[in-house]
Length: 155
Image 1: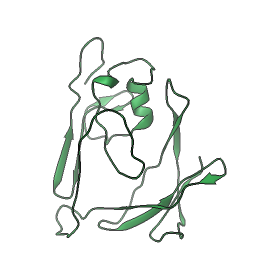
Image 2: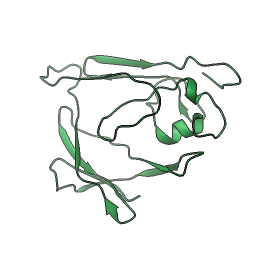
Image 3: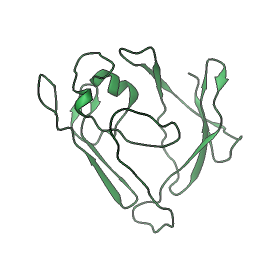
């Protein structure tokens, strides 16, 4: 995958962001990850992905205001189960009962961490964070892995 293009105006995406590509165990797919840093709070951004000579449309996202600032922007969130994905909706995953397989299957830890990079703010597993927390605006999120049975490495 080529670099991710980022900018504040659609069609003028001049910042190039390095991308890490990870194979998904048990599946013939590759997951691409780009870490965005230094974004301005309460701002809008556009991005475009490119791979094998093709490229996506321009997509957009907004950053939230700092938790100490007042903002008219509303933070909306939802909760749902399993590893379904939505390309245009930012979301944060939580390990669950389907990911307790420690082997390299399509549902195990390795597959989960190939797809997702949770915040490194909690207990760590060799592949990544199993418990984490983050704050968006005035909303706090805590993700806890409660599975530690049948040989699951757990926290």
